Amino acid sequence: MDRYIRFSNNNKIHYGLVNGDKVSKLMGEEFQDFEVSGIEYDLSSVKLLAPCSPTKAVCVGLNYKDTILEPGAKWPVEPLLFIKPSTSLLNPGESIIKWPMTEDLAFEAELAIVIGKKAHLVSEDDAHKYIWGYTIANDVTAKDLQKTDGLWARSKSFDTFLPLGPWIASGIDAHNLTITSLVNGQQKQKGNTADLIFGIEYLVSYISHITTLLPGDVILTGTPGGYGSSLDVNDKVEIEISEIGTLTNYCKRSTDTWSLAPRHKSI
Image (cartoon, rainbow, N blue to C red; front, side):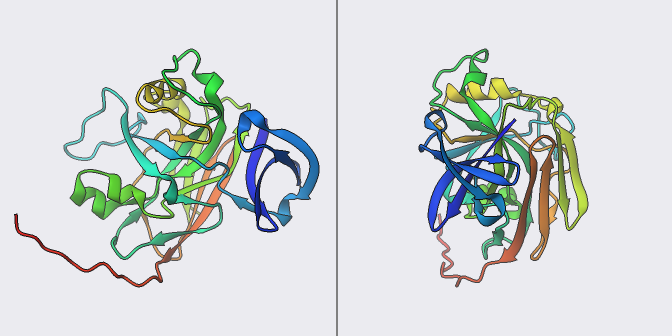
C-alpha cells in the first residue's frame, strides 16, 4: 500500500509519499506524472492538506443496504447523485463551520474514490485503471436546509462541508472495508463497503458517462446506516476506515458577520 499526501511546507504546497514517519516529496502536479524528488521531510513537521484538489466531488446518496429509509423515501434504481463544489473542501484537523444559515448540522462517514486520470465513457471492466486510490470523506450536511429545500445543493455546499483525508491509500482492496464514525469518542456509525448497493467500479463507469472525471476528482460512495446524527459546536468528529486511517475534524460556530438581508417576495 502507498500513502500519498498533499502538504504545505514553508508556504508551498507539494505532494508526497509517506514512508513511516518520513515524507518523500514528489515532483509533478498530477498522479500520473509524479516522480520521487529525493527530498524528505519528517511527517510531523509538515501541515497535512486535503490529499487532492478536486474540481468536483460527485456524491452518492442512499447507497448502503443497512440504511433505514426516511418516511416517503424509496430505494434508487440508479445511483442518486449530487455534487459538492471544490470550495467546500476542508483539511484534516481543521474546523467545520456552523454557519448562521443553519441550525442542524449532520456528518456522514464515507469512502471516497480518488480519480487518477481523465475518465470519460469508461467501462465497468476498465474502471480500476482510472482510480488513483481511496481516502476518507465527511459529507457534512445542513439537515434543516436539506429538509426544507428538497434539492440538496444548498445544504451540502457550504465552505468546510467536505473534510477529506488524511491521505490517499493506493493499492488496497476497497471492497471490504469497515467504516466507523465517532463524536467525542462515542461511536455513531459502523458499516462495511461490502454493503454498497452500487459498487466502486460501477460508480466510476456510471458517473463517467454523465460528466468527465478529472485527475484529483473524488466520488463519495455513500454513508452506512446511522447517518444523520447532529454535530454540535465544540464536537470532535472522527471517521475511521480500515486500511486507510482516521480523519479528524472539529466543529465551531462562525464568527463572521451575518450580512444577508432577509427578502420576502410575493409570487
